[in-house]
Image (cartoon, rainbow, N blue to C red; front, side, top):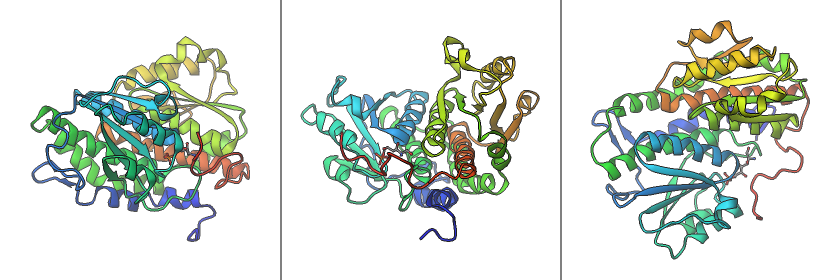
Amino acid sequence: GKGGYDHYMLKEIYEQPTALRQTIRGRSNQLDGRVELEELPPGAFSDVRSVHLVAMGTSYHAAMYAQTLLAERGITAQAFLSGEYGSNPPPADDGTLVIAVSQSGETADTLSAIRSVQGTGAHTLALTNVVGSTLTRECEDTVYIRAGPEIGVAATKSFSAQVATLILLSERLSRDVRGGTPAATGDLLDALSVLPDDVQRVLDESTAESVAKAYHDSESYFFIGRGIGHPVALEGALKFKEITYDHAEGFSAAELKHGPLALVTDQTPVFAVFTGRNDTKTLHNVKEVRARDAPVVAVAADGYREVDDYADHVLRVPDTHHDVAGILANVQLQLVSYLAADELSRPIDKPRNLAKSVTVE
Ligand code: M6R
């Protein structure tokens, strides 16, 4: 059941600290900096020269996030919509690791992307929540995100658990591929270990309700961010449109001047995601939308005060390592979407036209 919550979505948002504890349990050793994914023996990735991530929807946003994490570590990686990958396959060979990211492990597009690399020599890895799902049978290896069952059509805790798992996987890959222990590791493992508590703090202290109350009757919403903030912006917009039925569009803050700015008015709230990297550039974009009188909601770290003068609302997240900051920002945006949809009395767990898993192409 819904355990006292009005909707599964809200229950699952609140389950994130527990889900993340399960995700990271036993997988990183802060004392010696080791990262262990039990399913994968040490050195499993030593032949990997490039990584393809294939996924749809929210899982695609987690894949985009991982593309940035891997690039930071010097690994050539690209996220693909699995629904495009199979029909327009990029070159893959025995140096390619293809990671299929799917909560359900049953998404038809993602299964067919994996089938399309059979025979190329590429190594296939499933990153999923569902034990024994079709994807785990089609891929050579599986890493579970261990989020627990997700019932709401809008994916929430699975995104957080996917990204946390992909952070660990990126660390493992960078060691196997490049050898040695990257300098950032200690800080990152510390940040991951306190992530469940940080998410709890976001849930306890969020002011998303005032944002949802102020803006739920606008007709169009924009979400912007850079780097890992870009997939978080896309995910914020996807969640918002799925459950509020209002138009919401996410894009890189870098794109703003190249078109979307034409639509920005005092009627279009803009959500700006700050993650601790290139924040000054994103702040510049915020100033541009302010100059068009757009209401601005910033999602920013406690310590980032520069934004205060330019935003109508700031949704705060605890200061943390850059690589995990996007998970915290996304939790704030989940709450905004949920609370706005609730203001509008939408059928949050079963939005029209959508199914929990899309088993046809
Ligand atoms: O089960 P999967 O992760 O493969 O599902 C992929 C998408 O269908 C899914 O994320 C969808 O976009 C959700 N409704 C997003 O909330």
